[in-house]
Image (tube, rainbow over all chains, first blue to last red; front, side, top):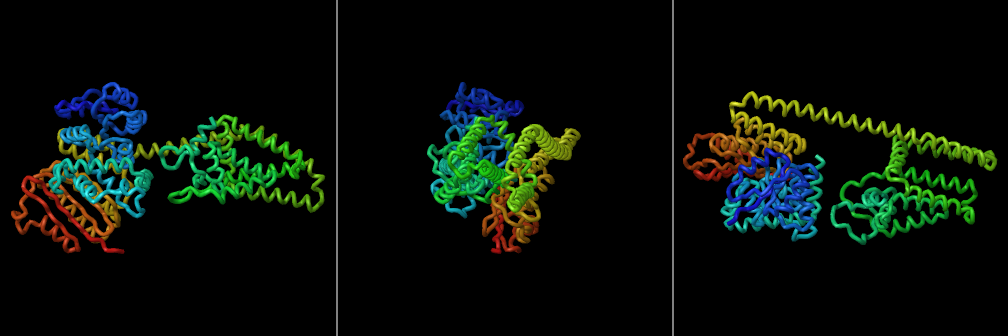
Length: 212
Length: 405
């Protein structure tokens, strides 16, 4: 298997070199960018497999990069990487089209794993993101507008709960007696719902958090 | 230029693809009376101000405006709106009413109200001022609006009531003394003089108002800056100093950095919650205290929240003991805590990926697990399960049924 080609987008030089040093041999860092402009340009020129995307950056942040690159029809995959715990940041980049969200204190091995997973087209949820999603989809006072998109299945809920409890995909598979591939399928399906659902609670919930 | 404003005004409440042929609805946001003008403006991609003035003008001329407005009000559905309805901007309503009254007075003074040829100057003048309004550059227009609206708003009720009383009183007096006809030219000239003075003074008043606003904004900004600076000084700078003084002790440095990170995160992202009243806040506080005490990072994820009952407080003590055990004995580099509040039940998981142990090998007298966790939970009507195997880490699961209030 050839190395996965990765572009690191972050406005902190120190952090970029740190990530570069931590990533294993299966990852090839093809470039770095430090703001929205250079990121959009580098993605166009280098066509990386995966873009490691910082959420807060000069010039509009990660969401602006997502909007411009994915809006232009690019198929490149994004993994959001941030120090932020704010719900609207997390939900914002995921709804913007990122395939996963991890916090910056993730270990090098876990990050390598997450990049590989995103490169293969799967989704990556950190425990905190799983918690946010459970929270957002939890209240079921109003009937969902689109039952297919606006609610989670029992199995998806179980998988998210285990992620929130700190289980790795392999451990979840063992716990639920399913394959790792099935776990990945469930998480990808949650990601799709998160991106496409126009459930009222989701936006209202994120708005309520922002007011705090 | 006006288009830019219009698009912003007409922007849908929820983001998404704008519908090329939107249905005429009466929005709640930005309405003055019933939202008819606002909705129609969005439909026609016009400035709502234009439509409102048109309604006022038509009402003054023959009353058509009021009839048309009422008809549209009846036949247009209200836009669905979530949450508390925003208050109407009464000062704007007052301005439109004032414009209407002024036009009415002018019509009466010039005798044009009865229709016929005399009505034309008013119509022409009205259309002219609409065009002027549209042509004025947006900055200046906003300035006009903000100065007049702003000043009226300050004590709008009193100003408006006073104006009405004065006008009614004056007209009543003149009618009673049969001198209304004689006073007509006087009134016209007074209006002209007042108008002239207003024209001269307006730029100066506007400048004054703008200056005042700027100063107020600046003051608020400075207060905010001072508060942030105070916080940074008390916490971040203090910690950085401590880290420099402890630079030989990597464990202590990591603990300090972690504790500061947590505090800053809470300050930035977490709602201010009372840790004695809310479950999520209590879990976070317990985790923070044990993290500080043992220097092992504890990652907390909370889903839902509920008030803290005595049973849940006992549960927090059991959870604390589970965290202490994980931090002290497991050797795990990170501990995951997950708390979920459901309508009937609260669940807390404390998990490490450390050494694990054999439950059967734990001596009867080890108080930590048997008494502080399992025993405590059972005494308060809850339950505790522990899953562990040597080398597999440990997970403590606590459950507590909630009594329906």
